[in-house]
Length: 291
Image 1 (tube, rainbow, N blue to C red):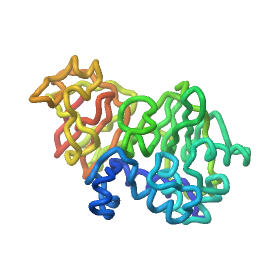
Image 2 (cartoon, helix red, strand yellow):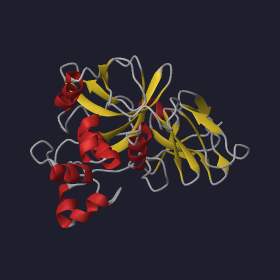
Image 3 (cartoon, rainbow, N blue to C red):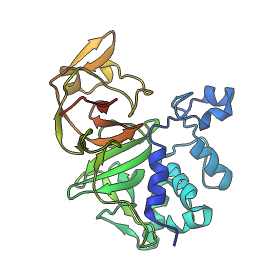
């Protein structure tokens, strides 16, 4: 059988860091949609919207808010159009309310999460945002979401693809749509511990939810990698600014700062962790930067 959960999670992980494009960048060069970071803006131009609109223009708008479109695109890439529709409750839909409704009609909408679920968030009035659950612990879920940011909590129009972690008790979680995956063949485990690609003797393991102390002054970046821009001082959280240096407008986290790991990401053999203010290097070029 081929509709295993590991396939869609692998597709989603490869998209972390993608940034939506500005209208100007798209009109100048439509191919910019296929570049991960070039032409960034907040006009909802993405390759996910382009591709899904081409498949199903009556339902998938372009340009448009794209959190649900991103999930549908990941399923389409992992399983093909027909299987993706089947797994997603019978159809594609880029409106989160309707998307959740597809699962509800199949009696596949739950309050307790499993790896591979499509999580739906509400704003107190209606379902407004969604993502893919990639890991579950006793107290948290880890997701990959489109049209969001690395900032804590639900960001329903943030401009990029990011990995995030929430407490299961988070009040804005509405529920979980459960695709009918094959029951065998999944390589995904329900935990959020990520080790570096180096041997265990040379690289530490970092865990979501644990506190670490910075060993040197560290740049805070918008994503997991040096290709992502450094965050400005005023882009850090209030608490982050209390423990940062304002270096010509750039926020540099001071050595000795205690940080909480919200997510872990491997990048070319290095390990980055997400903290409330953004991403910092935990293990880079063979050196450990937090303990």
